[in-house]
Amino acid sequence: MEFTEFRVKTRVVAGWNLSGSLDIELARADLERGLVVTDPGVLPLAERLLSAAHHRLIGVYDSVTPNSEVGQVEQLADRAREEGARFLLAVGGGSVIDTAKAAAIVLTEDGHLLDHQGVNVLNRPLFPVAAVPTTAGTGSEVTGYAVIRDKGAASKVVFTSEWLAPVLAVLDPALTLGLPPGLTAATGMDALTHAVEAYLSNRAGPFSDALALAALETIYRYLPQAVRDGSDREARWHLLIASCQAGMAISWAMLGCCHALAHACGGWREVPHGVANAILLPHCLEYNRPVAETRWWTLADAMGADPVKGVAALARRIGLPTRLSEVGVTESDLEPLAESAILDGSIYTNPREATLEELAEILRAAY
Ligand SMILES: [Fe+2]
Image 1 (tube, rainbow, N blue to C red):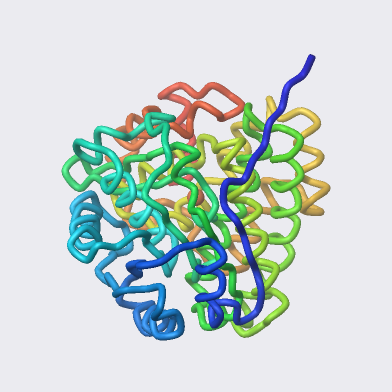
Image 2 (spheres, protein in one colour; image 1 turned 90 degrees about the vertical axis):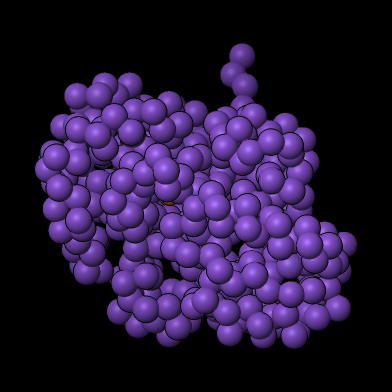
């Protein structure tokens, strides 16, 4: 008999200008004494939220950088301890939310952050995190993943556990209205890659399939619209919902070789995560095509195009680079990147078991 399972640990609420009534949502979730976690770019918004929900929030930590690192996570955890915070409210993109999730590990478990990397090492409730995403991309507001850069090893460390999922996600598309085209394009392609990899994953199930296909169809349709006109409310709403759906899909089905390679590019050369995915995805699709069988045609149906050509054309249309050589990767990087990718947890759910040489070949094709 077949078996399947699905759950979303996060309570998700979505609505225009919902962040303005954040205090109500925090009260419903019984969250008080929260430290806001953000980056300098999002600080003005975070301060607005702090004053709107000042009964439930105690301060702001605004030092998160684009590829957040282990040291920063520890700094945030120290600050939360000093201030007697009882939850973290992440307001920002993937790096901000992942930094808060990783700090929750330090605030709950003994030992060093890096002791807890890997799959299901964390197996009890963690210090609570609530998330207000300001990009439509990572889906980190609902996933059980946190990805942090280990500067010393020049690699990305992935923490995976259902307990990492935030307790509350507040989706307010108004917060994404001002995002510049480049960031909209890159984060949107990250979400699209989540949908595609979840659907082709060897762990895919009927519930993750439904979420992945709905997300894929929506992102493929609305991303160019949001890049062209950042104030398009219809496109912004659909993209924020779809990136969250894709996050739910990968929470169960997990990822594949594209994310393994993108994590390596991010750790090694700090290539922005969405840009790395956009460059690599057509080549990873080509690689996985022989084992995709009927799923290939369902992908094609959802996109109304051949998956490889459709993804490559979309990335070009929204102005993203199409080669690794354009984003600071050198030819001598390709071998170590493949070596790093084969150790990444995302590789285990790729539908085709990739060898080191095959990963290097994908990188050469994308170079
Ligand atoms: Fe991603």
